[in-house]
Length: 358
Image (cartoon, rainbow, N blue to C red; front, side, top):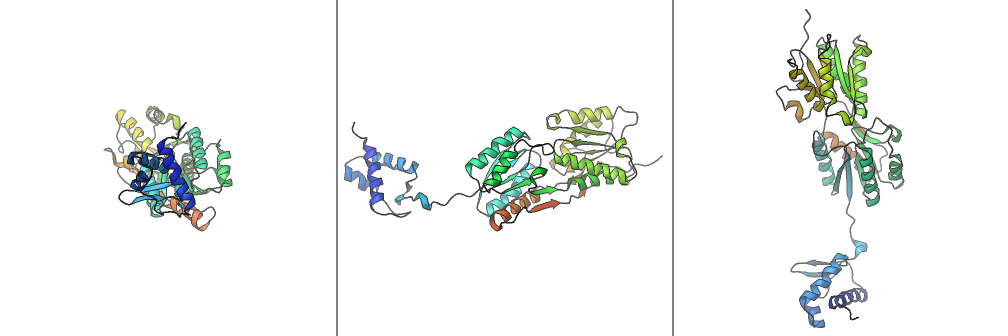
């Protein structure tokens, strides 16, 4: 069978490259030259060049010509992967903005993915990171208070010398580099503020499948202990990721039916606090007149409603920038396990009130 015309042109260009000892960027015979040589149409030559371009053997620049591409001299694209539990809501866009600021200044590209706090999705994205050969990884672990089933992939990352930094939390068994908030201190400050306002009947609601919630609850309990209150006497609600849309409201609704209802509540984060405040209002009570509320993260939700939340600040962009800088310390300088621990501050707004004794 006779070879297609455009295939003849492809063979011609390949032979030309092979016999002229070209280097990357050398000019190749033009479309018109080759069309005249073979007495074929320019469309036939263009089709051949399109195929060669797909094979990354040539590059075409409009108005300038066709050039040889030496794949051995092609600069490898430098890439950083970022895997967070969520991407488009709450504090995560701000964190990613901080990461992107540093990554782009280093001329790396950024690949984003999220897990929805699902270990199976974490596994899928880790597999892609390893197989696609990224230069480094920033990852927020899923359900960090639980044992990870993906330890084999983290070991593979280490074996392939792909550096990674954990964000917001970390798997303790990995002993990794991380950029996190001192959640223990944040939980302590939240409870301490209410205690200093005279509250002693303080409830708390915390997430229990992520380390942030575990440490915030521990800090909360330590503050109670330090102020002479038995932490076991406090009403504490705990929930997991799958319960986030229903548990907080119903838990608070139940607390309000108690004869000795709490005068204040410490919430895991602003997202939960919004539901807690709604439950209080739906029961005909007011924040802070009847119940004070302290939250965590200082997200956009903290000031999005009529009740402006007193909240423990999460650094967001700053934490993202620090995570990226730690990763580049590992990539460029070879620093082993650099870490950043942010000591949070309390932002006082309108959701808390001093408890006056009768």
